Image: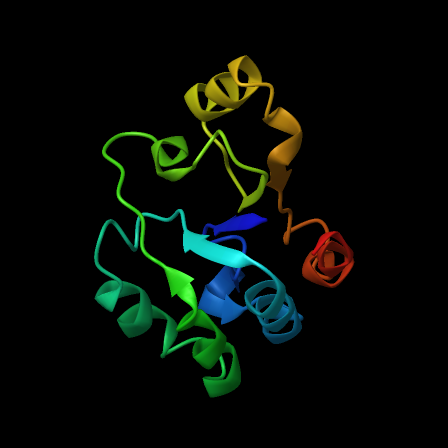
Length: 130
């Protein structure tokens, strides 16, 4: 299965601190699945992702990120997603356009809205999906 990750609000919580359980989440995802970035920090080049994350997450979590592939998109993150595949997309604030695109492709259930504000342990719960 393909896994797509946003960064802010998913891997990084409020105050630019690592989300709780981010290392376990990334390790499980990258060991079991084909993983991709779906974030404004990465549009075809992964350099900005590592520059940003190296100041926030642990070296172990950052090592997991080396297994996550780049994507390219122009206006909406959903452009980065292979809608013909089985996937999960971890995003904290999907746009209405992205949700509508997923709905039309019968893939809205593949969107996992992460809520670290109301549920700081959300990633621990989401590991079960991986």
